[in-house]
View 1 (tube, rainbow, N blue to C red):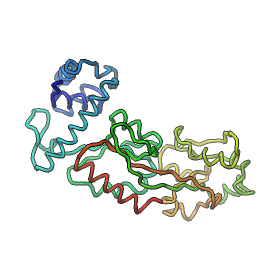
View 2: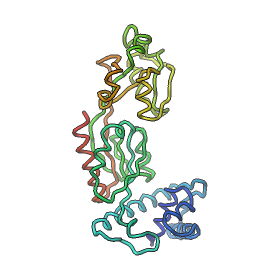
View 3: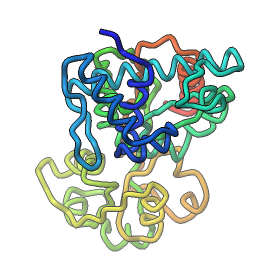
Length: 302
C-alpha cells in the first residue's frame, strides 16, 4: 500500500474535527481537497474508512488506519521538534504547526483533579495535550479505537498494541457532612443506612459507590441517587449535604472538605488500582510524559 502523508492527515483531521469542513479549516485546504484525499486513501487500502455522517465516524478499517495516521503524526512532530524546524514542506501545515506535537491522553476525572496536572506541566516544549476525561474503567475503549495514544486506566490487561505499567492505587472513603451522617447514619455505616441514604454518583458508568454498598448490604439495593458529573461539583455536592459520596484521600485533606466532612466508617474504603497504557511507539514526547506520570504516581498514590 502506498499511503500518502497528506491523506493520513486528512483522515485524522476529519475524525478529530467531525466534518470535512472543519478538517479543511484545520489543514488550511478546501473541503473538496479533504474529500479527494480520503477517497484516494480508501482506494489505496481498498476499504471504506469513514461513515459520511455528522459527525463523520471511522469504520473498523478506518480505526486501523487512524491509529497509523496518529502514530505517524506524533513521530513527525517529535522529529520536527528535535530538529527545531518543520519536518514537512507540504502546503497543509505551517512550520509552527509542524513543530507541535499533539498528544491525546485519556485520564480519569479524580486523577485529573488531584495529581496528574503537575506531572503534565513538566512535558517537553512544543507538546500540546488533548485530554479526554473518562472513567478509569472505560479509558481503554479510547485506546482501542485510536482516539488516544495513552491512558490512565483500571485495566491491567494491555490493549492490543499497547504496553502497560502499574502506577499505584487511589483510595476512596465514604464521606458526608456531620448533619447528613446524624440524619441518615444514626447507628453508623449499616446495611440499612446504605440502602436508604441518598448517594452521589459521578455518572452512570460510576460503580464505586455500589461496590461499597454491596459490602454492607450483601444484596442488590437501589438507594436515591444524585448524578453529578463534574469532579469539583461532585465533591461540593457532598460538602453541601446532598448525599454521601466516595472521595479520594488526595482530595479529602484539602480545602473546605477536611473541615466539613467526616468518614462514615474509618475502616471502610475502596482502593482502585491505576495503570498507564500506551501504544508501543518510540516517541520521545510520549516517553517523557510517561516518565513524568510514573514519577508523580510514585509520590502520590498508594
